[in-house]
Image (cartoon, rainbow, N blue to C red; front, side):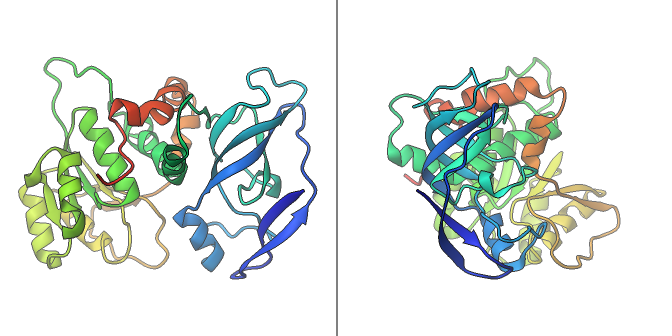
Length: 316
């Protein structure tokens, strides 16, 4: 029996249905799902049918853990009983691949299929599945798209120490980015609410580089500029309240690219010389030339990032 949570139309509630258990083709795996991550983008799809609007009926869900229940006839890399963590690629189409169901298909050639380490408990699995989409986007953005070092890479003698602004260091994506960049040897300036200030200061390694985002906008901009200029500016929140702040920071240092974590849902008036850049950041991992980075993400960063101190998923 395959229990499915499905959206039957735009803005509809999830409806529970019973569908047949799908059968894997020659190069597919059938996963019995144990944990599903609920991603913010999926809530936006459910409420706004964007981006992009799906075809209905639609089974959402991109991030999950489970156990391989069946393998296709041509699959040799995986075995029945393997425990895996999966983040579905944005371009993957078809309801059989949506995570909001008991049994899900995944192509064995899908790059983001991570074997879970022996001994990883349910709490650790739950924390990781909740963040795998962002955790794959972090190396995709910074190392895949921007060519920055990853944690564990050696800093070359005489290499210039770049400074990076992460606006929204207490967000899920922001926290992971701050840790990733700091562990790779970069200077990171970020923002936080007073509630999470202690944790974000610890993650960034410097109390003086974390700015209170509840201050008036002009004060936030002044405080950020005082710690710049920045080689990279990323707005981890990317809303109508934050884009004006981060774009003015860029404008003040001559313009440039403002990297965002979601598309613009309405008209934004950007200063001259500032370009807002958004894409599904994990997509760079699939590009030719990034094969080694993808192998590192799947084989090291995701399964062992917590153990190595590159990824802290919970408040202490």
